Image (cartoon, rainbow, N blue to C red; front, side):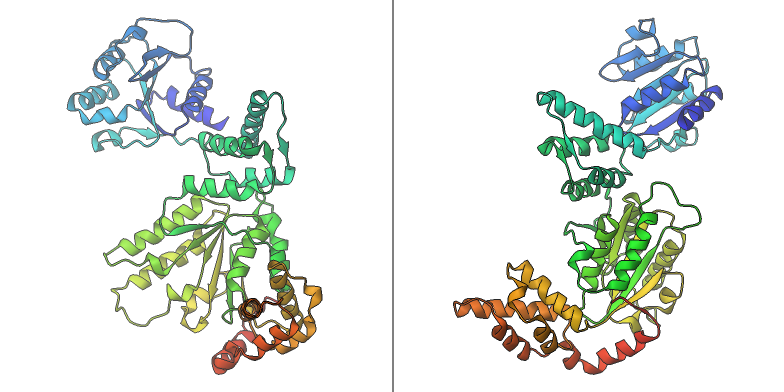
Length: 496
């Protein structure tokens, strides 16, 4: 075990003060028990409620009778003549007292005492500057996929014991997705999520995956500018986009692999350009569903703040939170609103600094955060953002052709409980030439309102009437739409 070997090396070196930040105290005790199998020293545990207790042997000695208060404990440690290891749980709050701080510094500097190793353990430890330089922080690795699977199995066994032997029903594919998306949680947090999923209904199935993702987001998110998108959308919910769907399907095994695949770098992201209303946002959600990963949305425009340096800090915190939640899909909608190209420094250079930090993160990140950015006005994006290598691919989501329009009608009718077989879909597709997906949906909605007002069912004539009464964006903004489509024709990959 690498952690055990690292701890044993620190103990052999007589490192005076170690810091371990984790809520999983049981795991810390187990790690030191294993490490002391290689470096034979007494092991003690201290807390303000229990005082000192010996852990390596089932016996009491002179130290175990010490009063639990901090002063008596430090005095007892100082008087101990055998080099020992002391695990001090939640000790750091008492460092605010000058006598406690001074006593601990003398122990660390080995004034009139033998070379004990003191280990401070807590969820978050902040030391005074005079102690920080003397301490070594020991990172505790997060559970492996095998450990996470054992945790779920243990909770399933506990459920069976408490429910008269009833076994938990497990969908292997759902379990694999949950295990993959629980990465980043420590053992205590992972067990909490597993217990909630198992004890909810005694079943681990596909509907538990979004719930696990949401709980993980709530535990790990440290930014108010990152939002969890619970609306699960799969590729089958999106009409058309055949090339984009094939692209995602080819890369899913690489992005979701537990171990890196030789010779294949994980995909990094795509930029979705297109005509407004043609489904870029829906495609972003579908990409997350296609990868089987949680979707996080970052509002770039909301990052900007009026105080100096606050905008840059907001961006750093949001990106750090996304990396902590990896593997995931990070969605930035209408990116041009937050990274618009500008030739002046009217904002004091904030936009340039934000762009620079974001480009650096895009180039240097190693976490499995797949970036999906959408934009309507490509001319407003900085050129350095569009160069090859920033994104794996730039897809253009164009106005749907007749076949895709017919599929869109079928999807929206089915979502509203209507049988698409009762409509002439080719005729509807022909009448909606130049319509976007959003405009087709609104035509169906308007038809339903008209049908309700006339106390009748929606039928073909009502839909045809609504289509004839609608002027799509491709007509209202014909010049702009035509220019965008011409620009994209030779510069991007068609998504359809």
